Amino acid sequence: MPNGKKKLNFRIIAILELVLIMILLTGYVFLLAFGQKEAPVQTVPTNADFKDPQIGGEERVRPIIEKEEIYYSLDGKKILLSDPTFGQIYIPVYENVPACSYDLSAMVHRNGYSFYTDNGSVVSKFGIDISAHQNTIDWKKVADAGVEFAIIRSAYRTYGGGELKADPKFKENIEGALANGIEVGVYVYSQAISVQEAIDEADFVLNQIKNYNITYPVVFDWEIVFDDAARTDKVSVETLTDSSISFCERIKGAGYRPMIYQNKRTSLLKLDLPRLQDYDFWLAEWNDGPTYYYNYQMWQYTEKGKIPGIEGNVDLNMCFENVVQ
Image 1: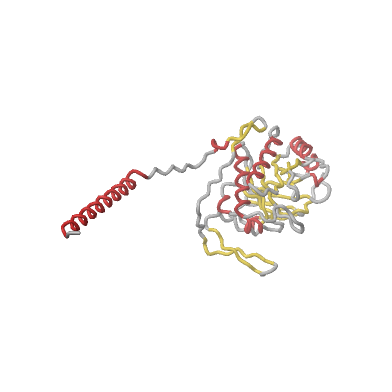
Image 2: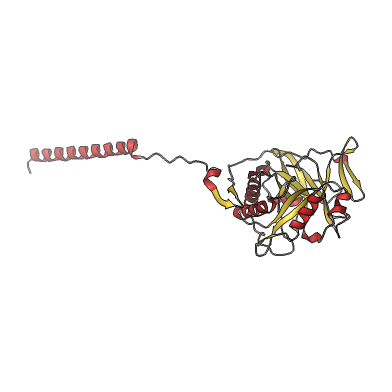
C-alpha cells in the first residue's frame, strides 16, 4: 500500500478513536450530573404509624423505642459485688445515672419494720406487695395495722410455657384494699422474651385495672428464674431493656405512672440503666439498709414481714417519694 494511503488510514482511525473517547466521556459526565436519583429521606416513625386495633374500648399506640449510639460517661467510682466464681468483682459507676440521694442514717428500724425520717418525723409511706400466694387477706386488719399502700399482683406469665394469666385473687385483693382505704398499685410478674410480649402484658393489666382507682404505679416485674430452666434464661440486655421501655411507655400512654421492679444484682448486670432514666425504680434488696448505688423511689426491704390479717410472710416496702398518680 502506498505511504500516502497508509497515512490517511491512520488519521481516520485516530479521528474515530478520538470521537469514541469524547462520546464515552460525555456520557460519563452526563451520568454523574443527572443519572443519580435522590436518596429517600429516612424518617423516624411516630406513634401514629403504629396504631393498634381497639383494645378494651381504647385506642392504644405501639411504643417507639428510639435508639442511638451512646457512649456513657464513667466517674471512676466502683460498685463492688460478690461473685461465686471470681470472688469480689466491680462495675464502673455511670456518671449520667443519678446516684442515691437518701441519707441512709435517717433509716429507722423497729420491730421488723423500716421507716425513713426527717428531723425525727417519719416521711416514708408504709406498704406491702401481695399476690394469690398470701391466700385470703383480712384487709380491715391490714389497714388497722397502719399499711398505707399495697402493690397487688394483677397478672403473671409462666416461665415454662409463657402463658399470660390473671392472678386468681386480683379482684378480691384490689377491692378489699380499696374498700378499707388503702391506696393501690399493681404489678405484672413478667417472663417476657420480646418487646411484643411486654406490650401484651401491659395491655392485659390495663384491661384489668380500668375500673379501679389506681393511685400507685403500674409495675413491670421481670425476674430471673433460679434453680430451674426458664424461657427467659437467654434474654439479652438489649431485649430486656427494650421490653422494659415498651411496657412503661404503654402504661404511661394510658395515663398511669409506670415503674420498674428489680433486685440490685439483676439491675446492675442485666439492665441498660442509662436508657431507663424516665421511669421510677422499685428496689428489691433485703437488708437492714439498702446498698444500691443509684436512685430509687421504693424499697422492698424484706420478704419475711408479718402483718395482722395476712397468713405467713409478706413483702414489706417503703415509698420515699410521691409516686402516686
